[in-house]
Image (cartoon, rainbow, N blue to C red; front, side):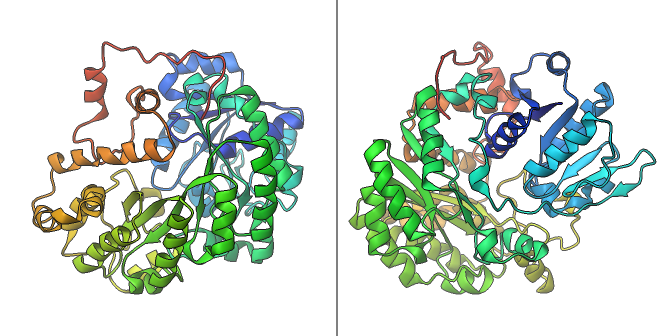
Length: 508
């Protein structure tokens, strides 16, 4: 059987799809990928692939575009459609709202998708596959729960990066590639869906949080290094440093076999002298860490981060001691947040001398604890928003009621400058009170530059990636610093063709 994955553009290269592809190929099936941004004739590309089923991945808030594409292709090709990803995991009832969907996958989809393809192959019953909700010929919906987590992740094959890299070399050309060394998070942050998933699946943290073996992770890195340029490694798992014994073993082997600097995600409260020393010894050059809010009350009561100001200050001091750069993630527009709370987030980032920053407005996804909390308190602008209508297309949209909407949007755009140039603090306090405008949004270009610096990507490489993923895309994506539509950019660059970077080897 052949499954063809369809994706809007290459901005979010999916390791999950690579995992599915390698697993299905291991069991005798085939897979392919189409980026709509790089398809001159998508129907011809689909016909040439001769797929038995079309696969899509949907994130809540951006799911409507995915469903619209799936509906169009189903209507014009008649090929069965399956949609997976976070949206269908947390909202499996979406199959009831979209009659063109044949199947949805909920949870980790390797075994459930394999079972579905095996049954399709022999024209068997596909209505009771665990983890797959299906639509019968009579239109009746068969809901079959969430797939069980894969306990033995050591048995999983190396992700099939060739799914992307062989067909779209511009993705392979980046000198940084992402890896995942483990799955799951044991914490109860109110803005995250993982606590809901743990409760829904009724499994303990010991089974929800899983780590690949050190050998398995290093084999994957070695495989990529042997085929594509690799100058930086980033571990995208929620908590890279969760298991100190694993980290010690990883550091010992990694530093002997690889000279590639890496970055990772961690929490301030998991940092101590031993952890920081291991990170430095293993050539970790930077970390991403969730600071979220400068208000300890908002951080721990509203967000349930369970991280004190002291944890942040001590953790940052350790990272600075060992020469590891800090990239903080922050949230603005929280329930009950005041302007002073928002300004305190700027001050604490300056105090710890963070090197890079990202700040997003709160997106209280339905079924998260913070959504329920804000709804009970009457804080939501629209507490009756339907899951199918929830949208994150405007990255500066404020979901919670506030008298400081204008200031919050301006702070989100000017955050970098307000942290880096405290001597202009008085000036910025006056600027943020001005009407939010397209002109102010333009200053958000610094966020793209920060990412290129954090991942040590040259500006030329960054532009090539940006051009291929955004400017070549017919669907585009929201960039809050762009004051006009993507089509304007396409006109500005109309003299350039969206040609791929033709290289025999490349990086993510």
